[in-house]
View (cartoon, rainbow, N blue to C red):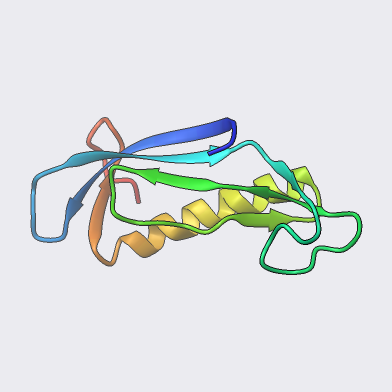
Amino acid sequence: MTRLFAERKLLYSQKNNDVRKEFIIRLSAPYFVRNGTSGFAVGDEGCFACQIEILGLNETYPEVYGADSLQAVVLASGAIEAFLKRLQKNYNLYHLTGESYF
């Protein structure tokens, strides 16, 4: 990960299992992406991206791109919440206090 921008610590348990384990979702600070350095054309002006890193859970998430640094952060933040909602299919999610996340 480039430079850490934000993180959230949560607990998870697999469905039908009461054992809770901690995991961390980290968002990198937005960074500039030049044309030719990503898997797609970004134009002469380039664009910005944020990495989403998941520690403690066997899941991955791709980079999130935006036209500028603010859009990259906003899109990545929304992607994290949508990702957590999708995780509910296989996991129960909790705040560190033990309260249900959703």
